[in-house]
Length: 164
Length: 261
Image (cartoon, rainbow over all chains, first blue to last red; front, side, top):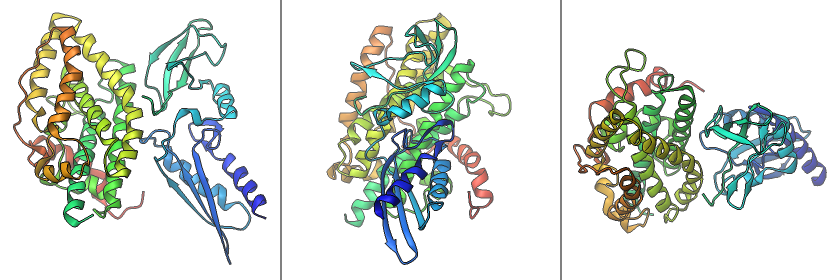
C-alpha cells in the first residue's frame, strides 16, 4: 500500500512544473528534499519539504500552492503541508539528468561546473563559443548569453554551490 | 536561551533584516532609471534577491516570537529600526516617479561597500552559534557571490574611465564613508552578541573589510576617506530619509493589515 502511495505522490510531484520553465518539474530540479505521511482515519496527511533555488524567487508561493493541489488529487490524501527549508541549501548539482534535458529543450543552458569553472554550451547548437551578456537575467536563477556560432541569444542557469 | 539572550539575538536579526530591507528598496527605486537596459535587469535582480534575504531574517524573528514577519517588515516605526544609516539614504534628489536626479556613482559605491561588508558578515555568520542563522548564511552566500562580482566590476570600471567619473566616484566614496561608522556596530546589545558568539566582534569584521577593499583601492590609486558616524542606526537613530522610505514601502500593507495575500 505504502509503495503505491509513494509512487502516486511521486507522479503527482512530477506534474508540478517550475512556473517560469514549464519543461522541468520540481523533482527534476531537485527541489524536493523529503516527503512524509501519516495515516489517519480520514486518509493520509502528507508533508513535503522543498528547497528554494533562490531565496527571493517569487515563484515559490505558486510552487507551494501547485504542490498542494497536485497532491490533494491523489486518492486517500486528506491534508497536504508544504514547507520550504534552506538547510540543506539547494545547489545546482541537485538537478537530475531529466532536468538537464528539460532545461536544454526550453533553451536554457544547464549549470555545469568543470574544475571550478563555469562551462556554458549553447543549448541550440552545442557551441562553446558564447559570451555572457548579463550575469543577471529575467529570473533570479538565470543569466543572459549570446552564441557566436549560431547567433542566437539564450539563457543559462547560474551554478550555485557551497564552494562559492 | 534566557530572555536577555533572546533579545540580543533578536537585536542582531533586526540589524540584518532591516539592512537588506532598505538596501533592496533603494535598489528597486532604480528600476527603469539605471544607465542601460542590462543594468536595469541586473540591479533589480539583486534588489529582489536582497528582499528575499530580508524576508528570511524576518522569518527567523517570527520563529523566536517577535511577531509576524510581514508586520515586522512594514509596521515598525523609524526609531524601532536597526538598519545602518547608509542603506536608508535617498538615491539622490527627486522622487522615482517625478524628476529623479539619482546619482549612479553613489549607487555603485554604496552597493559595492555594502555588499563587501555583507560578504564579511555572512562569512562570519556561517560559524554563528545560532544554527538556523548559520544555515541561512550558507544559502545567502551563494547568491551574494554574484552581487559582489557585479558591483566590484562597476566600481573598478567607473574609476578607470573618465576624469569626470573619477571625481563623481571620489565624491560618492566620501559620502558613503561618512555613513559607514555604524555598519559593523552591533548597538546596545553588542556585548551579549559577542559573548553568545552569534557573530565575531566589530573590530575583527572591520579589519577584514579593510583587508578586502585595500588591494582594490591600491590598484585604482584611491585613498579611502575617513570613516564617520552621524547617527547610529543600530540604536534606532536615523536620518529623515528613513521615514519617507518606510511610508512608501508600507503604503499598500498599511491600507488593510488584515488582507489576505
